[in-house]
Amino acid sequence: MTKKVVLVGALDTKGQDFAYVRDLLKSSGFEVIVVDFGVMGKPFFEPDITRAEVAKAGGVSIEELQAKKDKSLAMDTMTKGLKEVVRRLYDEGNLHGILGMGGSAGTIIATTAMQALPIGIPKVMVSTVAGGDVSRYVGIKDIVMFPSIVDVAGLNRISRAIYKNAVGALAGMLEHGAYEEMLKEPEKPVIVISMFGNTTPCVEKVKELLGDRFEILVFHATGTGGRTMEMLIDQGLVSAVADITTTELADEIGGGVLSAGKDRLFAAARRGIPAVLVPGCVDMINFWAKDTVPEKYRGRKIYEWNPNVTLVRTNVEENKAIGEWIARAANESKGPVAVLIPLKGVSMLDSPGQAFWDPEADRACFDSIKANLRPGIPVYELDNNINDPEFAQKVVEVLLDLMERAKGGSFI
Image (cartoon, rainbow, N blue to C red; front, side, top):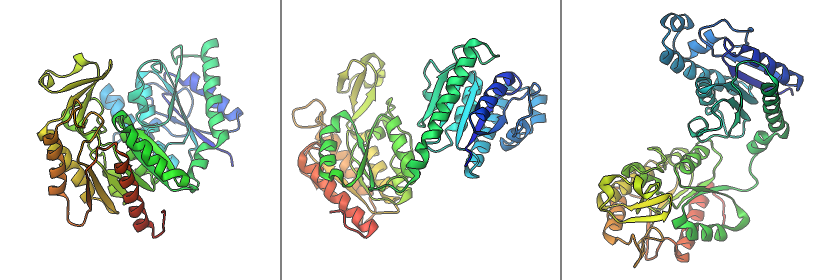
């Protein structure tokens, strides 16, 4: 089967570059579908999907965009429209890889569309802004940002080399078929686990106890990690969840820098997969260097984890809200779910004699969970710190029981 590459960009200002890359892709054996999201000038060549089609998919006619000459409206429309077009091409089986080229505006339009595609689909963006902070463009997807070195504004000895390398990179990804491999039924059930430095002993013990019977994916609960884990759960690639480190809830509630957003914990609930929920590291709100901590927190317990990470101890009110969040996610679960509570602390720092030990704040979270859970959801209160081996043992025991109930088979 000939693989299809979707080439996206503005064919008015950068058409010569796109014609060159289109021909490179064709000479590499790919079928190429060119999508034009330029607005004002005449396209350098006729695309397969026109700017009018993209604009229509974005909810505004190309004639209106051209008449109004409102750059903000044009950006918004073409971004929405390209996302719809690209996703449709993928759903129809007409996209096996995607390549875009452009400056800052073209990059945000193209990469927003790329973010709508599943992980594993090759995505390459040749961009003038690829040498800086690309987190806004990449999001939580596997987009390869390729520095253009010179502007995407005509062919020269440097741009030709960059374009050839970008096409070669995309061709290599397509040749290796990583996405097709990922879609195969996994040989082992996939379990995802959330982790932080302050819960590492617990997670390592859980992994040890689960052994090689499962494929285990561990996600660092840094905001990006939590969002990525939720996305993979939503894609149906996960069999069960051991959400040991729910610290990102504290950052969302307390205004920290590692929030994973308001949807954290809810993918497993929607998918109905077995989930063990733990209030792990909910004693800390994360900030960067100490001088970035907001003034309102200066009277709190503060711990400098390293020169670039500063932790602020959560209080009773914040922990109560975290408990309500965990209970809400458990209540909405369509599958088997359980909550495990470590009565002697939710992190390394939250244990007797340590910097964040605060039984009153912890109790506010624990009581809030129990008060808001619907009947029938089991809660296990253990007289352990979260990092005690006995706690990890209980996590595994409960998780395997939930998986057995969900699948009707035995994992023990």
